[in-house]
Image (cartoon, rainbow, N blue to C red; front, side, top):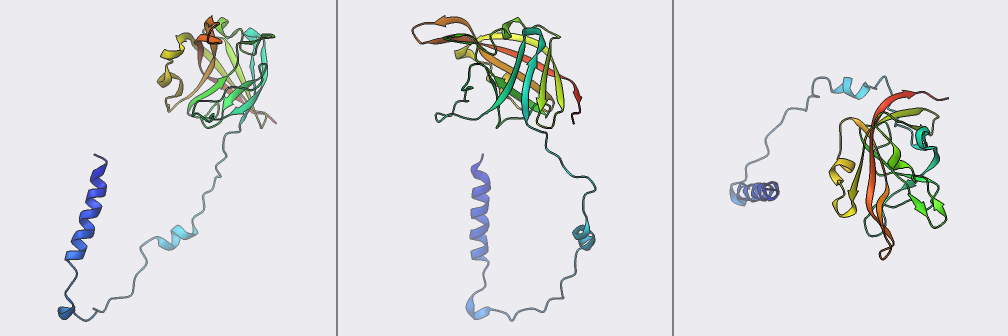
Length: 207
């Protein structure tokens, strides 16, 4: 199906070549009337929007009172192999920066470790969250967007619900992700993921 526009463009080029007049029958150029600006063209040039667009500030901090989380947010991108980066510090969560910002339409994703060799990490108690629990994300301008937990799920890593977590949405949403389930000592990682789904409750302005 995607080849059709290319084929159509090629066909138009061929037709244009066939339509070119022969050298011995070429007619003198026709006189044309001076171009007249389209109606409203001058008005469009002078138009300026009355309101400026302000991008949503980046998230700077996450707090989850129910489980004692209070963490700065590192920016995460993609690793060399194309997978999502994980936070470099056990005690600090990270926000997937190529995705939506918390409060914007779409699923904003925040990741955190469950533990380390030294003990519990930032999202160690994520599995304790229940429907109605509050999550607060403070943004760079001091504004706070509050989310309410809708549900918590656990999935084997080879059955990660990619569409539910990452799929674009017209409404704002928040996803918190960490490891969970049984620990595979041979592989050195947990076999499952804990995922918390939340939706905005309110936004309060900062300074």
